Length: 412
Ligand code: ADP
Ligand code: ASP
Ligand code: MG
Image (tube, rainbow, N blue to C red):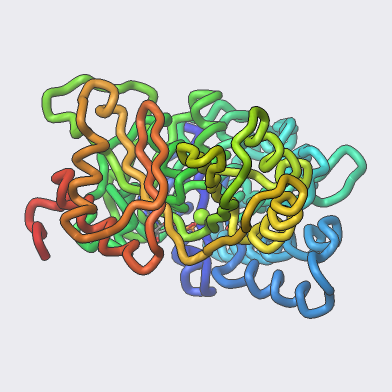
């Protein structure tokens, strides 16, 4: 008998019919003798609808505490509906909000981190033969305030519960049948991966593949939670996220391609090139709590240089204002920016043992006449910034260049 945590995402519980299908699936597992904890997201579109409501009554950013009180209702509706559907099928069940379980988090509203989970109640319910249904994406801080875990946070609830309960597996059910070489919505030739390492999945997630929330992968890696991504309503093995990095001859150099359109680029030109220049430019940006991703400083000309960096698009307007002020202070020629950019990254542990991966990437982009604006590399990834309009072309070209296309669909 196994203990399994199953997380169902927004589209999988997007309608009453789907919730009933999920209930039937959970019932089947239980009839096999497994103990089941189910984590559910809000019905698809619900979290966005709630955010939109909040924006209508707010100038600027809604207050985090109040936003969390509201956002947590999305998941609260689904746990109740799923429990009712299970009861109708004769399955004993009980639903809990994050706060009822006591998923303790810090107080960083809208992006809280889980600190501790009280597993007592859940264990008692499982022992009594009940299926436990838990609301994803939410917790409670030490003062009793409701918190949420950031977009996609139900994945993290699932993995954290699996870690706390030492579950045999955490299954993430979604609208694709596993983790693919790249987003199958963008590249039809994308292929499902049998396995991917935590390290690669972490890079993929942090570079834009939204199939798993980054924190859920961090958590699973840290506590060694067996994690699998599966299709909610189709049979199949899905994709296993694993620790071991099997050395095999067929191991591809690149496991996947990630991309995101969430960044914007800022440039300050004609900066007097003196020691401490990077700090003078980025210090005020970081003081405003704006995270900087890629950074490029050009070789100086006539003792002045250009300096470019990227930030999240939401921070673009703020960062540009700060940069303009800095330009005046340090006597730079001008500051400007561009948010029609996209970042494309190739990821793979195979890169460690192969040379020339980056140049193969650049060659593939050059063949499509795509200009590279910025580059950054680490041990298992290479990222480039390009003009946004070339994003899909770039991803497809790289998918083919690194021989990732599904065999029967090459050159589709
Ligand atoms: P859920 O609502 O179940 O949490 P998400 O929308 O968060 O589902 O995640 C599933 C989606 O992630 C897929 O529909 C797919 O478009 C997207 N996706 C992005 N990159 C990948 C990838 N490499 N493999 C699979 N899906 C991906
Ligand atoms: N409902 C939340 C969101 O849409 C959390 C989740 O689905 O994982 O981001
Ligand atoms: Mg998700």
